[in-house]
Figure (cartoon, rainbow, N blue to C red):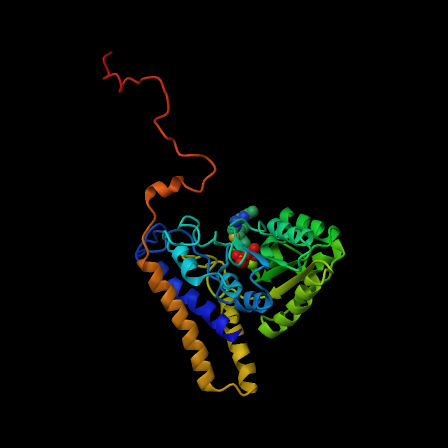
Length: 337
Ligand SMILES: Cc1ncc(C[n+]2csc(CCOP(=O)(O)OP(=O)(O)O)c2C)c(N)n1
Ligand SMILES: [Mg+2]
């Protein structure tokens, strides 16, 4: 778990560097090797790793717009994922989905930029497992800013009434873009939402990967054993802006400092040292994690960009095979009037 957390953190730090290339001095969101928005998940690692650590490739995971730590922990192909983020042809979706729309059917992972959107598909995956009599589990991750969305609440209800093997995981980082949690809900413990659907709900108050993993053992074990869904809320921290380029003018310095100090990776390191893990082992784990990230980024940057014509592939409507029929215009007739 330590190695995966370090890998996820290093990945975000390297993407941050790559993303900023070419976007200065005036912030041009379309410039540079990673065009478009980028939501980094540094500070969320304990959640993705503590939960996905218990999953197999057959289990399904849906993630929100801040997905990288979850995708890495679920075992999404790091090279193909990186190529996708860089908009390259060999990316998971041919470079057309980008960082918020990673899709890897080999490990049953998907994410979406629409908040709470991952909940209904996770319920669908749970229903599918039940109908197949398989012990596969589905996990839907969402932010605390999404817990009032109808898609989430309706999914809790359907999963409960159908007794489906689904675990909902709320990542509470105290912020939804610039909106502090206390301004949008009076419910400080999001796991209490479970009571309204007669489900077990648990909140893990610290971003401690061991505590999260313990809570996930219960929730996932329960789902796998046919005992139905549950809700887990975990406290995480947003170490960076909501998206790259966010100046965070709305965020008190003290809040950001507190998020930086509460580092889940350091917390785990302290625990491991108390269990006699030595420097040499840490160095080995860190360098293996970093090497994998560097290798994926170097590989992705060498990949070709998609042909413009690929924009017409994998879409619901066919490309126009010939010019649409229309009445001749003045230009077509040489403007003879
Ligand atoms: C249905 C929907 N409404 C609004 C948005 C715009 N939006 C993008 S991220 C976000 C806030 C998400 O906050 P939270 O769920 O707490 O996740 P976090 O960014 O903190 O990880 C919003 C409102 C969206 N993507 N989808
Ligand atoms: Mg949030």
